[in-house]
Length: 120
Image 1 (spheres, rainbow, N blue to C red):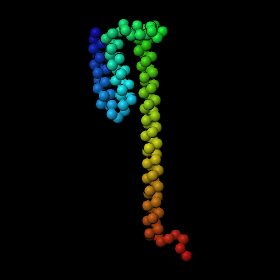
Image 2: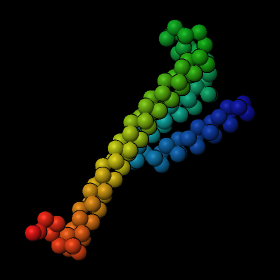
Image 3: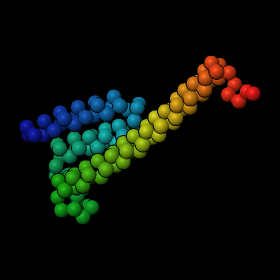
Image 4: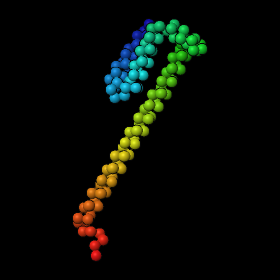
């Protein structure tokens, strides 16, 4: 009973954190909320986890929970990887634009100071 209360409190904290992130990353936050709520249900009804596991051909409910946890973790890592790649690409585009703008500004300053480069 103590473990159920501790795990439930942890899941409540996870749901609250995911709810806060719902606007920024809706897919990830929604998946976390659903998984946490389902986990809370299974914490208080462990016999249902075993029954559900048998439907999928898995021997124990604990194994089913572990398999689902691994799948969700991999899916979240994949989403976060793609998000970070997108962020890196945006930073690269911005850095390139800044470098080109600075190069253009420096060449204009050079022409103002020295006059046209190819004047005879």
